Length: 467
Image 1 (cartoon, one colour):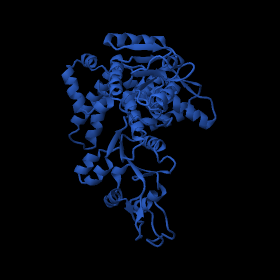
Image 2 (cartoon, rainbow, N blue to C red; image 1 turned 60 degrees about the horizontal axis):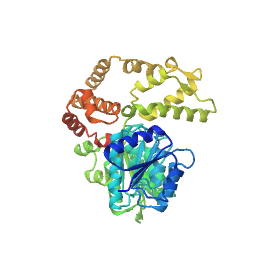
Image 3 (cartoon, rainbow, N blue to C red; image 1 turned 45 degrees about the horizontal axis):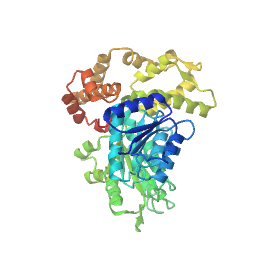
Image 4 (spheres, one colour; image 1 turned 90 degrees about the vertical axis):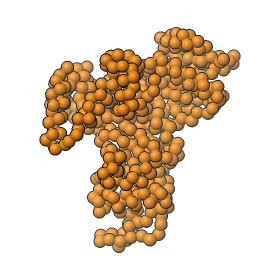
């Protein structure tokens, strides 16, 4: 059996792999630099290569390119401590078998190597494309899944439905899908269907002929024509009026549309990406959204996690947005102290990434010094975080949420809040144990089977990945 090659300039990483692979009875060779591995190719070829992305001398991506040129079917796993979308894109674009962010769970890494070995034996070609956008950062497992999905979808023309709360970054994901697709040289056109008055939306989407209605003094091209050959992003699709849902379905089904007041069919060569913060299944049940349109749009669903579901990403996002604001304003970058960062990490961020970006802009403008402490943060953020971060009274927050819903006349919300409670505890326990479910179950005081059942009931598999 051909060996597995481990290439990393970090001796401790090589040591971890050596111990783990030896324990599993998997043959291996370890190298501290890409040049050493390339030299060894004169003597043997590996079954699988696991390489760091950043090393002195030739990088892991350089090595990936040379290996793929000589051995297109060789599975290469790229490791990186810089868990951003750029790294994932570069790895997938180079033809990597998989992308392994550091720090990683050793058992998961060994399982990944075994899968790659199986593929090596089958001699199957693995296709895994790209993606990008510097604003899309994240080390959280849920975001790593998003990165992988964007990479694999980028060469597909499939219709994508992006779901997630407002402010989570759905348009950024849509732009990344477009930018790394075969349509990247053509326009990306975005429209928020909830932000345009109902009587103007049809003309906005499909255009109109001169004289088709009062005020239509000239012919106008709509968003479908503007996006010809490219991508049309329909944000907040759940708010689209019923009659326009019918017209959109016809375009997706037949590939043709008519301008308002027009009689000549126009061919639509457009990839549609839709997004919503609403549960479209519920709107379908309530007769507010066409079921056939839902199925047309919901070919592939990509869920963006809320920021509170990936708190470990708050520091890197905050530093990114502080640097961005400083560049835009031409000032020195503000720095958050550890205490201030803890306050941020304890905040719920109902407005998600957009709210964090706005907050960082506020800090850049309003905070008095370069080092920003808890006292320099906005009052509303300090107020909530005082409860949520320092072992505060979370039960009081729950009581406040219950009061808010009761005042609003809501009914039957105990199941939703219970699911949120269990979801949060399970995700945090898995994050603390590096994804080890047995240990997470023990820490929570649950049986392994109970935890597995709850993960299935709460639909968490896509967020946390399999063991």
